Image 1 (cartoon, one colour):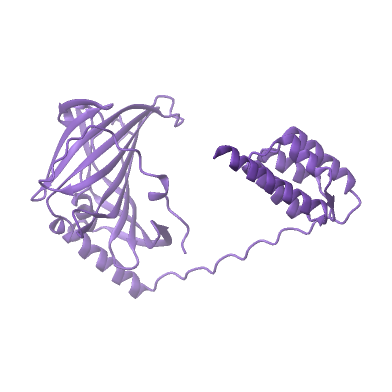
Image 2 (cartoon, rainbow, N blue to C red):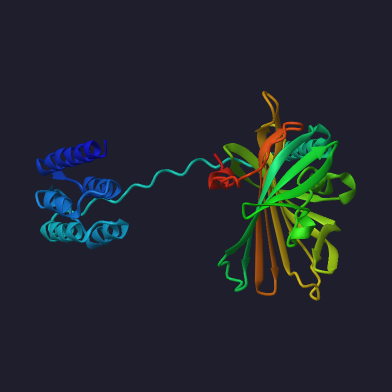
Length: 354
């Protein structure tokens, strides 16, 4: 099948080049042809040979040739393009690209809408843990370190744990370290441990006695849904941070992404504030994503998807990327013998508002 594909690709290239040779091309058409040839990995010499038969109706400037070279045009192709640039020097310049009109800005919500959204989000957060079923899932923690402080990350290890939730109680057991079977508690492994994904963090932000202050900041798109993004600040010291034998509790601030359609919460970001200078850790940032996940046939719940925890102690940077995978009903036991592939980046990448 491979040789047939190559013959078809060469045939298409020949047809395209013949069409180009029979008419005067615009610079835009030429650019499209070269980019297509790069994508299809056509032979540099053959592309150059076709270009020698091309006639332009506009001036090809050096900047365009250099841009195509930077995109991957071969040396023979670049040589042919330079010849076209010389031959077209007296032709009128190509018209500038007309930028696409910017999409209309989405107006911010009214004060009444903001109040309504926050009320729905608070009700959702306060009742979140009560709606969770008993279940099992696989927690995969990829741990990274950078002693330089420049985010040149080195992967330390990968921990795979069995996590169960029964009557709102969490139980963790590490079953694989770098794909090798073990039977350990997370504390026995050492390093950063994250907790609170299954309701505690939501309560700490939204329960009335924390007196959290919210400010609407922008619209965003997350996993294809429109989100209200609120900045928040919790003044009470509730964020517990431990480092070796020392521990402190500090206030924190961050962002909450609230689904515009139903008031559910899709992302929480929190940053530790007012860390005292003597404490070894200077920065802690946590980002937690939720998504709709099916547990059993036809039963879907909004559950933790991924947590990223970053910290800095002097120059030393650490990063934990924690994913929650293979959700299943409690009792549907499964032996964990492999480390799941990382989630695709688009699952947690914020998009511009639509």
